[in-house]
Length: 469
Image 1 (cartoon, rainbow, N blue to C red):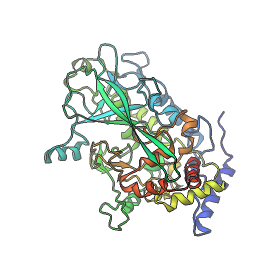
Image 2: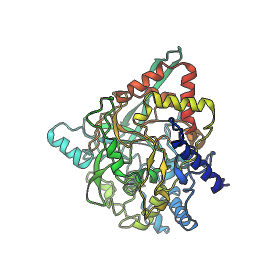
Image 3: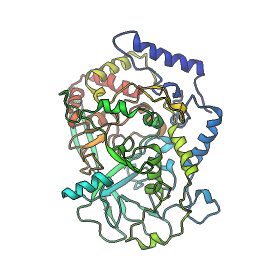
Image 4: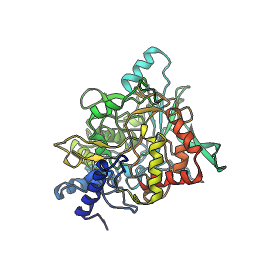
């Protein structure tokens, strides 16, 4: 059963947070990090509720979008004409198989080979000035035989592109209080190539499905506010040099700011969804009208289509409406002294140099739920150098192999509740929030070192704060 705060109580919580903004020198983060869209849900369905300020009429569209996000797509031709066109090559047959209960994916469990909720990006490393120009224009240089993503499933009559295996390397970090933390890093191995050898210098990058909450609010942050945060040449000398990615917008037929994806390679939620339908499920759209079959994949190109395109603009818009309105749960335990101490530490050690808050969203006419909200996503949506340990050596548009977009932190503490597992960072390598912090390098190394040198009490408080988000 869906349980929400009574609107009056939610309003009080939000107002209390706003009053805190003006009543003293230290501004405490409020419970309602998603503004008046925030919902009160703390169980396994915490990431699956619509914006709290949504009208009854719009909830009908939300539920229809949810249906096409949750239920499986089938092979064409089929009697369910609105839902056919799966493949021919694909990674999964439904969005929620990767975004588990609208949350993040996970690495295979011990003894499992199941790569559902993760995927492998591929590309050819740029070597020449002309290659780099292609990367800045196209995003990546795709492999001529396998494209830019390995699809390890296929419909009957078509061979999956390759098999994906993971192995792990480990290293141990000793903290100042003597505690030792073993960090584990997944290594991707591709095999059983069905269409010949790939490029000999093929680059791979393992990608974890991120949580879906609060995406519409991120899209509603004015671009002008993000540009104010850019400091590409570190003019202020704080060792932080974030910048926006510049990516192709298929709807506008031009380059614009990237906001979504681990390297901010997508400009809008609609294009992000169209790309996922294409690459992950094999569903074409008006934004990406061609099947993800290369000329070398003859059987793939000969399969029947589920329509032209396979998902209509109307259905793509409904799925986008759904993903735009998945609400952020209220923070928990905000009056707990340990949480408050952790918040102070979060501020003092430099985490907020990249994990920014608050923002005021634009005054939107078409998307009223997200309009004029004061939000606390804890991200600047900028690219930052995160060091060699996190590098995938794979540039995407303007993002280098060492650069990643700052991920939002809201909802972080409910990760295990929703997905029954904890895996963080772009490839899911971190099995706890502490591991995720300890993997930080590059521009974040100074903050990481401060965590390494914390007392046990301080470190526990910092984690308690993160768990409250």
